[in-house]
Amino acid sequence: MMDLSGKNAVVTGSSRGIGKAIALKLASLGANVAVIYAGNKEKADETVAEIEALGVKSKAYSCDVSDFNNAQTLVKEVIAEFGGIDILVNNAGIVKDGLVLSMKEEDFDKVISVNLKGAFHMIKSTYQHFMKKRYGRIINISSVVGINGNAGQANYASAKAGLIGLTKSVAKELAARKVTVNAVAPGFIETDMTGSMPEKAKEAALAAIPMKRAGQGEDIANAVAFLASDEASYITGEVIKVDGGMAI
Ligand code: NAD
Image (cartoon, rainbow, N blue to C red; front, side, top):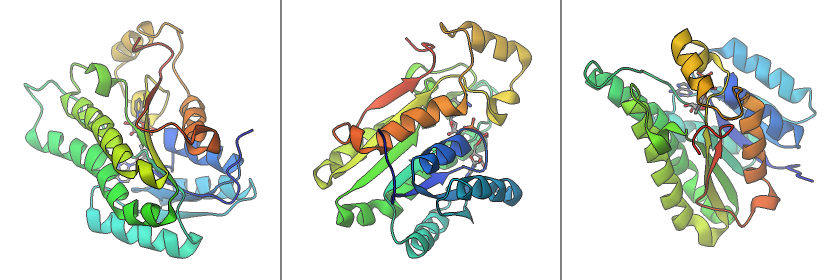
């Protein structure tokens, strides 16, 4: 039985979607959760209230993870408030889709700086803390697109593939300190991010899923909870696809 009682988790982009489902799942297993959001304080406060109703501590923090100073300040504040960090989930992400022919350079840079550098900033800011603790769980939310590529998402797929390289490298660096670093690669999950896709693209994505259904945030949260648990203490540098068979 997975138990995260007494553990402190930081989940970026947890005011909604997959991040919120992860935050609630970790809280349901007993973890205190710092809810990190980019813009919507109201939604973040709602998530905090739902987490507190589960009987654990929670607090919302506004932070743009693409800004290193912002990430560093955030981590210091969370450690001061919660007394430490045990679990870091790098979930924050954006899309700026388009074929390379029409993709602006700034749209490539922006997606890399949030989806890939954001995770690097958070890992760099918590690195020494985890080293000293000789314990930690870092879980990066990648994508099956980072494994297989996707037309119209060169920026996003590059960032998500980069996250896998980041995961494996940091896993090797921190393994001796009993800090595990893994990635979860979701397929097509029903959230605001996929809700804004054109109908035709949604139909095509669904048709490519052997299980014939879109995933839910909870499907991803279950994999994250497992990787955060003691049961997964000998798993590091791994990428778990949670995609209904989409990328087999
Ligand atoms: P979403 O758009 O609903 O949520 C993204 C979250 O990231 C939001 O809370 C947003 O505020 C936050 N965020 C965005 N920019 C940020 C920044 N600069 N700093 C801090 N937070 C920021 O998306 P989602 O579908 O819930 O996706 C969550 C993660 O899962 C993303 O990394 C996404 O790439 C990944 N993913 C999603 C799917 C899917 O099908 N939905 C598939 C594969 C991977």
